[in-house]
Length: 84
Image (cartoon, rainbow, N blue to C red; front, side):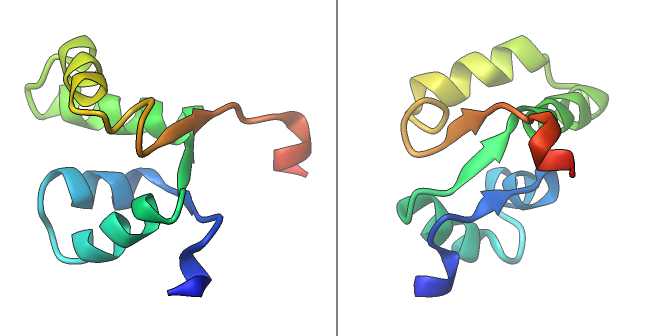
């Protein structure tokens, strides 16, 4: 799966992984290959989970404790250069 190296996950991909939806196996492989997520997409994940009744701060803490955030998945900034 060389094509997933250096992949930047979007919110829907991370949500699929967290919720065990179809495609989560691809996301798992991307995480193992060093995928990242930008802060805007991560905020969307937390917001959508909040809309579903989860507490965003608690979800973030849980993901850190599980080694996903800050472990398998790095949150990266979104810069002006990324938008151009």
